[in-house]
Picture 1 (spheres, rainbow, N blue to C red):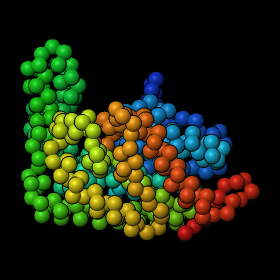
Picture 2: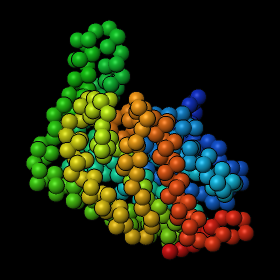
Picture 3: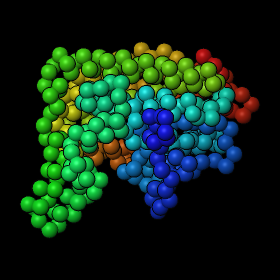
Picture 4: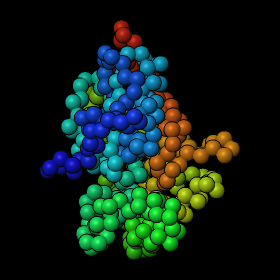
Length: 331
């Protein structure tokens, strides 16, 4: 977290499955001499800690674009954990945008978590976590630093009782909905504020991208509460409050329709709603690991949907140049 900012930048790391260089998760299959850069900006769903480098949304999208427009695009994975659109906008202003580049925002979930579930639309999740630790007292703060979720999983191997004690100490607050979520009027007001700020941030991001000679395309991400028909597995995830805190569904039910409307009214770029992209599935096929993080198969489907939106934006509206690339231009 660079001083004087609310940016959350991944630390550099090199491993068998996950690699981060200069604060960017590695995107595989990038061309050697690309003409343009596509910046994919979002939260942990874009960073993709659940999968190896080759199976993140940006890596899938890179391969799809290589097949459609070889050598044209290099993707940058600008995902990071816990960030909202306000922090994405802050990050966007630091990127070395050039004429003809493309900016994609993929988001929505963290704005609802911070704005409605945490009850502070103008805040940020790291700040919220810091407040929670300060309020918890020195003992629980120490437990958090010792990574109690990991300790709880290890304790299960030795004692069900020990696992329950350790897990409860780490996550006990998840079992009870926060007080403001029990007030329907307060929840609705927070949802309206969150959606308004969400649209404001997207439009500022679009204006900044366009002023830099880039196009801006927004994708509202899928999340488990948006599904029309939940599988028994999804129901079990939703009711597992250690993974998905009690009250989270209330926050999403209040805010998500407003975010969908806000994104559709965004000025300055194109917007696509992927809320239901994971609804259709084969029998016994599952995607979600919690309320918004998904597996590699879901990432592949999401990348395909993003490609369709981008091609509609890139190819449909602009004449091809000699290289076969439809130049972005300003709008």
